[in-house]
Image (cartoon, rainbow, N blue to C red; front, side, top):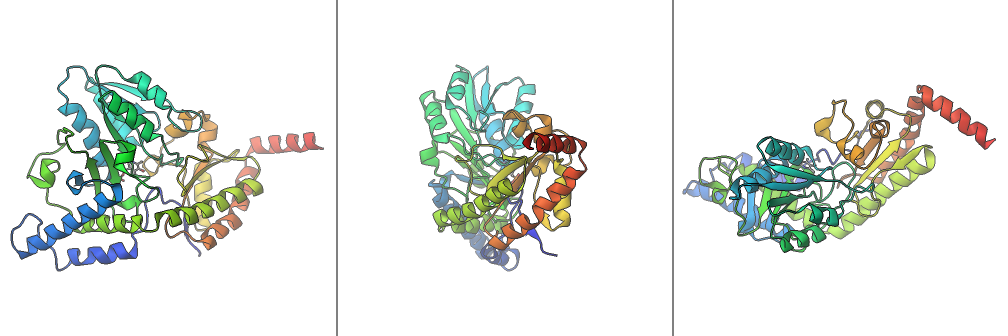
Length: 396
Ligand SMILES: *Cc1c(COP(=O)(O)O)cnc(C)c1O
């Protein structure tokens, strides 16, 4: 059976160049990067090269990059690290209602520990209003954390403006850029961020490795204690093959980025437009302009998302109802409810996310099978029958 993967916001395939670059470090070059002998030096050189590759992609200095186990750790490190390093007695954190659970659940834990947290709402387009962020700032605010691109909608947040506000008020600014790095330009200077989280497996690198950009001068308390690795920011023997994979993934992500954005955007638009023209009662959620070129989130009224994902999977197409981390939960997406969707609307929403390896054939195959799947599921819905009949009657 043909298999089409349209769930690249959950994870991506390791690029062949990345796999090739990692191989020696799983085999012959297995040294500990902290050892002083030849083996250690080979590993150290590879880690430092990756740090430079990543710094180049982000327009950062290599000394400002710390490797971690992934996006979740980088997010936790940013929130707990800043709050715990702050000397002020009262502490206040500002974030948004549409963050990834790695930020949201860290914020909730901080609340339990006595930190005041403001969850800034978003507009129905899924975009945060920088003025709302500014209004929330108080004398005790220590950190603002706003994601760059949302994992469910693809919506891109106005970080430049929020960064300017954070600097004016002398508050640290963190962004979860796990979904944007490698897909759109990410420049820590123009975004004005002090901390930025990223993850290798979202940009065709391996799982279990990521990084945190920490602007020079930012004072962080580490999450863990151990050796003096990563300039005392993150102890533990470096995951050398993973770090090499992340470095290579960053290097290839920076190559022909504009061209790749354009071509994947054209495929996404083809998918979206043809779905909207061939399937009734379907609508796109989130801002259609301020959006990753790889993502579309479409609501199919009168269907239940999980059923749709399973039916599409039987046809060989992998898509999702939203964040992979919340799959299996009965709760509707907090992102979709934050933009004003009802529970029903949130439950009938599907995310299609494309990647470097998505082809025109993949999209056309999806378009071939999708209308039938929607129709089949709707034929089982008593609501749909009633509404479709009454709509036909009113047309007649
Ligand atoms: C995937 C994801 C994460 C978590 O990254 P991991 O490396 O899987 O821990 C965090 N934030 C966003 C926006 C994500 O999409």
